[in-house]
Length: 75
Length: 143
Image 1 (cartoon, helix red, strand yellow):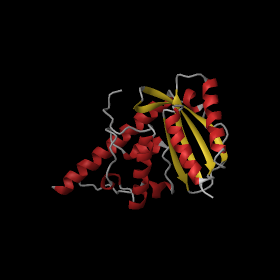
Image 2 (spheres, one colour):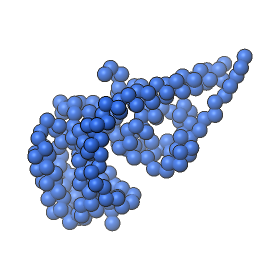
Image 3 (tube, chains in turn purple, green):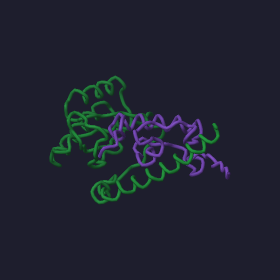
Image 4 (cartoon, one colour):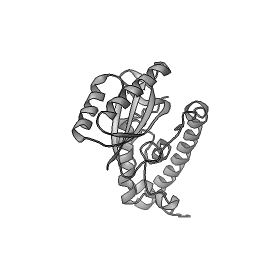
C-alpha cells in the first residue's frame, strides 16, 4: 500500500508573516475548524511561537464579534 | 509613548449622521484625556459572528491614538461602556506606531460582500480536504 506522509509546515514561515492581526479574519479562519474551535498545533503544523499569536488573535476577534465562539454551521 | 487601538461597534440601523455624531462624541471625550488621535475611520458594516445585544449587524469603527493620562484613559474606557453609544468596544495596545490610514475599506463592505462568502467557503472546503487528508494520515500512523 502506498504510504505517503505529507510534510507539515508552518504557514507563517512559508509566507514570511511575522505578525498576526485580530482583524484579519480570513487568515484566522484557517486555524479554526467548522465549529469555530481553534485547531491544535499538531493538526495545523504552525510553529509554537506563531500558534500562540494566532490563539491570542482569535480570542480577540471573538470578543469583538468578528469570529464565533461556537459556530453551529447553520447559516 | 504608548499607542492604542480602539475598535467599537455602533448599531447598524442608525443613520450616517448619528454615526458621525457618535464618532465626534468619542473623539472629544478622548481628547480630554490628553491623547492624540491618529486615525478615526469607519471600517464598515459587518455581520456579527454572534448576536450582541440583539444586533446581528454592526458598524465597525477603528480609532488609533497615542495614550495620554492613564487615569483619565481608564475613566474613558468605563465611560464608553456605560454611555450606551456603542454595542461593544475593545482597546488593544499596539507595539508600533500605527500608519495613517485613509478610507479604511469603507467600500470593501458593500462591493466585495458578495464575493467574500464564496471565497471563504472555498477556502473552508480546501481546509477541510487538507484536514481530512491529515486526519487519515494520522490514523494510518497510529495504526
